[in-house]
Length: 77
Image (cartoon, rainbow, N blue to C red):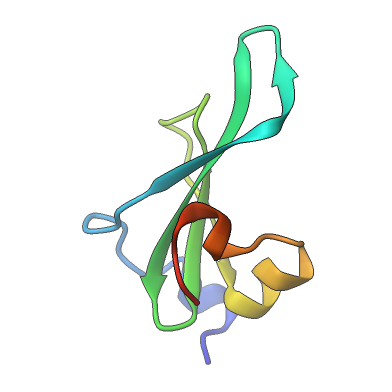
């Protein structure tokens, strides 16, 4: 199991982010998030409107607690 501090030590260079949109809109366009698996039990979550911002990182349990399902992105847990 990965702990919170270890999540930010994981490399994002080879991460393949997938975008999911919908639910709410913004004057600048539809709200979208990006998600990538970055380890066995580790995920990176980004904002498509801020691609230069550092993605937040979560364990699978934290994603589930937040109501985020990787299947919505076409990813499997």
